[in-house]
Image 1: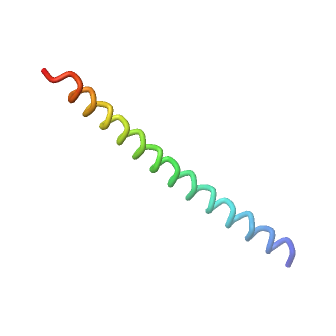
Image 2 (image 1 turned 180 degrees about the vertical axis):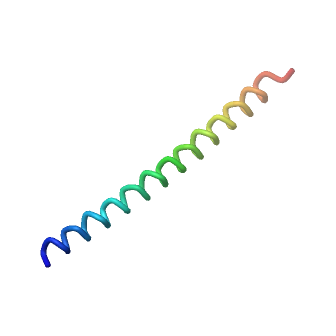
Amino acid sequence: MFGKSLGEIFEIIGVVLSIGIVVFLLIWGLISGLSGDMSDTFNNIQMPS
């Protein structure tokens, strides 16, 4: 019983960790993409050709 509940706990922790890593990477990518786009826009505004 205790071993089974421990296995379930570790299984849940593994799922939560993998989901958290995926969400973190998605948010990090969005932030990096947004900041990259913003810096490009600011560069274009500051130095019009």
